[in-house]
Amino acid sequence: MKNNRIAKSNALSASFRDPSGYVFTGDDGLVYRQVNKIATKDFEAFIKSKLYLQLSRDKLIVSHQEISDAPLLGEAYKIIKPQQINFISYPFEWSFSQLKDAALLTLKIQKLALAKNLSLKDASAYNIQFVDGQPIFIDTLSFEKYTTNKPWDAYRQFCQHFLTPLALMCYRDLSLGQLSRVFIDGIPLDLAAKLLPPRAKVKPSIIMHILLHAKAQSNKASSAAKPDAKLSKHNQLAIIDNLATAIKKLKLPKVKSEWGEYYDNTNYSESAAAKKDELIIDFLKPLNVKTAIDLGGNNGRFSRSLNKRNIFTVCADIDPNAVEDNYRQVKANKETMMLPMLIDLTNPGGALGWANQERSVFAGRIKADVLLVLALIHHLAISNNLPFTQIAQYLQSFAPYLVIEFVPKQDSQVQKLLATRKDIFDTYDAANFKKAFGIYYNLIKEQPIDGSVRTLFLFERK
Amino acid sequence: MVSHFAYLDPGTGSIVLQAVIGVILGAIVFFRNFFIRLLGKVRSIFTGKSSTDEK
Image (cartoon, rainbow over all chains, first blue to last red; front, side, top):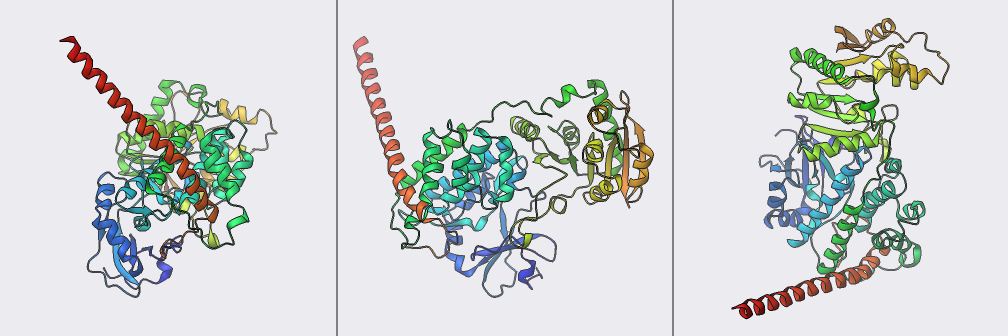
């Protein structure tokens, strides 16, 4: 492997806090991880104890290969090549249950680690990604040797990254998960303590891990020397089990959302929806696509038709209930070709952290062979007042092919949008739509969808 | 003993809290397991008795 002119500038921009090593992209464009010399003992303990073997065999952690012929410069001890992840998603882009499963995985891994006398150094939600429909731990360097009776360093981080957002979403409001975009190291305990309603504050686990925990953060002992507090392994496991039980019990209230019963309330009869399905597949057949992005994909209704044809789909929607519904289906049916994501396309997250570079923008991370934009254009152009040219310019960054459904003014859904506002959209029509998209794309196919007034288009990026 | 490789600031308060709630939760776990084992032994004693009684 010739890339070992590893300038730190090749390092992934979030990978700098842990002196044990860092993640970087090689000349081949693949992601590698360097293990530094100071991490030798911990890394070898992780391998020799067979914890890595156990976790990777059960697909709880990404597998990796050691690159034996890589020249090792400076502080490098080993270079490893982890299992590559094609679609990176962030905790604020997950539904409630995705975050819940990520939390439970973290706790499960800590339990398994303790059994082998190892412990997680950190419990960041960014240590988890979703692969083949399931959460998986990606931070191979997060394990250190367990020091007898030492409390868990990552306990506070776990509570802020996982427990506070889940509790706030469950007890206060589902949209509070978005606070994770603002608080990059998790929602602070004291803020959560202030926002939680009384009925949450009587639960013992909330009292312990959020309320008392928040109080404990105040200055009293902070200037003192490091406390000698001891926590036996038995007691640490008791805390971890308590956290796991508390998180399992957090459930979403059944909420009627705008899009929740979307497919019952649209103007698509089952047969018209099936025709739309067929048309999409027909458009895609000659293209040999392996991956797709479905923007505004709701609960994955049309994404699943692609999955059936072995096309991995990132299904992004603005409605947390729809994304939750999608993920529940993924779990129930053990699906591996779907990644549900919670995205507001008019304000996607990213560009976070130091220098706005630690966490990257949505369109930069998520690329595929084809982009689906079904039943969405009117929300962008009318509800959000976006000109067609700007929409086209943004969409073309996602994929070389675009399958997009144009929804004309006479459609009942558009009529609903215009019902309470002044119709200033003189240029909202198919002709202007084609003209604007023609700046960035070539039109390949155009066909009306039977049973509706809508038209499906296939474009190829110029 | 402090690990030099733990780069995270665990928060002094969080350390102290863990020690405290660890004792409470640990005790609950301990006694729960104790009673489960006890109950198991009691059950097996009674099952043992009744099967010898019946014959």
